Length: 331
Ligand SMILES: N[C@H]1[C@H](O)[C@@H](Sc2ccccc2)[C@@H]2OC[C@H]1O2
Image (cartoon, rainbow, N blue to C red; front, side):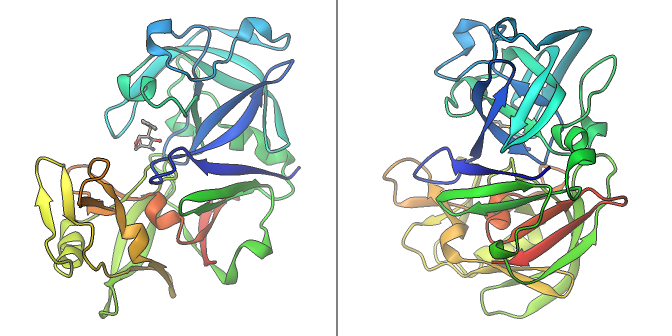
């Protein structure tokens, strides 16, 4: 098998998240899900989600699918890094992304979602693409779509080609040579506790010198920004006129008309440049002259996160061979 599906920004103003069309059940029910390498539960808004918590999202109704089966006595409950969360029960059903089908995928139906999911009407749920060890279903943990699909994929990989303020693609089972330039640099992945954890070889601010220093972090398609150690973040914003670390806005902000340097990060011998446009993430509120930075400190999180602001500057291969590796290429 091989397949491709679009990754479309959910907001035309800034890349807060990307959604991908999927079909569930028989006849197929189409939902727009957020493919998330930073978690490992596949959960959806459903006919079990209280109406008060549903605001425009599409839902999966297992009772309308002839191939759905309740996974008796199984429940799930997840809390994300940003404090959002959801919980519910579990079915299995036919699940397809971009033409790649898993006949019996664990579909976690939400019986409760937190407010940030209710208010995000463009996201109908998540597809966890982290390692299955992170799956929260109890008493028996379930496999991710990628782990279920892997044996039937031409190659045990998926790739992310996310783009700045326009649709990109997720490919499954193959590496599309037309999507990148030069060579793909592969580095080892630490699979404990279950994220795509890798070590970057260093960073540089604008045209400044490159600092070769290991930066271990996770590649997370479900996180909008890049979160790195404070020393790196302060070195970056020192080069931005009027930048301050705002307690009220919860991070580094600066005048939207400030000149921003690019941010360079290394993977092995390769270098990736996040252009200034990606580093100015969004106005703090619509029309404000104050902008929020695409690079923020990881000091409050406990892990460094290479989120969409970094991922969209590259073509990224999530290689599920044993042992797993992650590949980065320019594009
Ligand atoms: N891996 C990420 C995950 O996909 C999102 S869940 C999410 C929450 C609200 C809106 C959209 C998505 C959350 O932020 C960072 C980390 O947890």
